[in-house]
Amino acid sequence: MQEIIAQLSACLEERRRRLDDEIRHYPTPIPRCDAQFNALYEQRAQISRELQRLEALGAGDATVEDLAPLIGKYLDRPADAAD
Image (cartoon, rainbow, N blue to C red; front, side):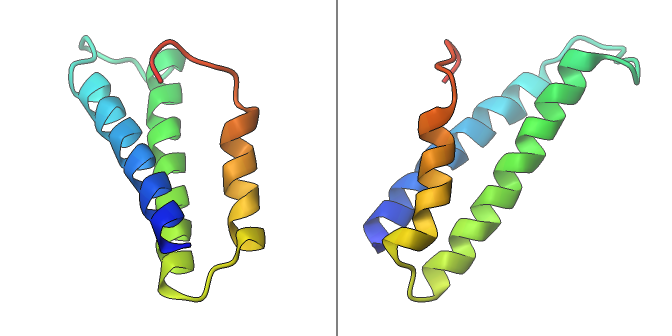
C-alpha cells in the first residue's frame, strides 16, 4: 500500500511543480479577475490538500478502501494535454 501512496504522491508532486512553474511565469500584471490564473492557483491548492491527505494515509494503516476515492477521482478526470 505504501508503494501506491508513494506513486500517487509523486504524480501529484510533479503536477504541482508544473503548476508552480506556470504560475511563476504567468504574464504580469495579473488582475484579480483573471479566471485562468485563479484556476491555476486553485488547482495547486487542491493538489496540496490531496498530498496532505495522502501523507496522513501513509502515516497510518491505509487500505485500498481508503485510497479508492483518490484513485477514482483521477481516473474520472478528462485527459488534459498538460497532464
